[in-house]
Image (cartoon, rainbow, N blue to C red; front, side, top):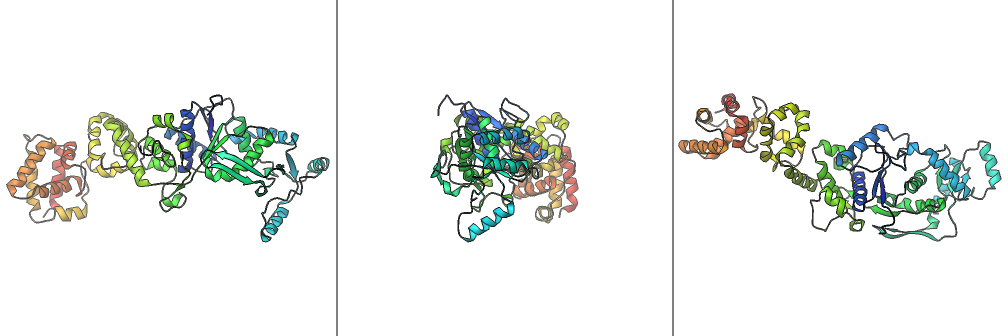
Length: 491
């Protein structure tokens, strides 16, 4: 790679919906490639579809990228010398580009009505021929064409592609050499009859004027590339290096979609995934550091990412692996970072306010070791520990039937209560363990019976984080109150 050519890449989403997983991966690769090569990462919003694009979707895309930590060097909210970075603010640029093509003799007006084009297409298909435009307007005398335009006759503008060329070939960093016979292409439309430019036109103009050196995007654009190369050449602009990314598949081998579950970045944010973990996992969907390393932080991506390690094989989205990666990052947070990340979920469920967490910080941090091995996402924490909040707890019916309703359990709860009421008993899990095991031995029963009855009475369920550490967090007073409330359910 020449050091004389500055690396400039772009992520150019259309704001027609939320930022989805595939788009996020494309953004990650562009961002990482720019950083690894001391280049520039550009964000451009392709919002020329008036029916589907919205300012709300643009804001959502920006929020998602910011949350992922994919900050751009040029683009909306950041600015830059080669903007504007919203296509709806660049129409004068496209007008100038069309004029440039006209001056170079590389664009011409087409007066064919849509119905006429449709009929020709149907006839070609019926004759089992390639339904490309027959170029019937290509050789209209320029003076006649201008008169018809001045007269107000509806028309589009088409690219006059070279007919003395057998094929278009280009080297794709991922797919290698790609060759497309020119006969498969027609003089495609650059500007529609309503004056709106087409995607294959504006994307080339934007990339050229923004000096994009590498176009890294999904392979659904692979078929557009030959057309775009023709536009670059017709304008007299250099062609960027292309790298097309394979699609992401669901576990069923079909393209990832809503039927596979959450697909938008914000949905994963709401589900309790950490941004660092999501970036890490998505980076591995089609790229590897060394074929072995799974946990790759942002700093490593920013220094070690390279296009030559991108695979052209489709990647399969495995939510279980994402869960494992996310749990690994949760473990790395430590108790303080864990509580900071958990706080929005505490507030959302009304379990605690920021002020309450600040007041009882150590209490909340003590929850970390009890749950970090048991949860994969932040949203899983509250259902697991909500019994630690409040004076009372709801008792699970099946748990009561199995652990409290048996004969003699009421007497057992009385003994447990008497034991825990002793102020001389240190309220610490090791001391509690010793005392409760002593009670089991005294009553000649298995310790499990004592612990399960106490667990259900205080947590409401047979399954919970470590019991005795939980009692430490509940405190003696609340524990005794819950034991008293459970006694009417005991046998």
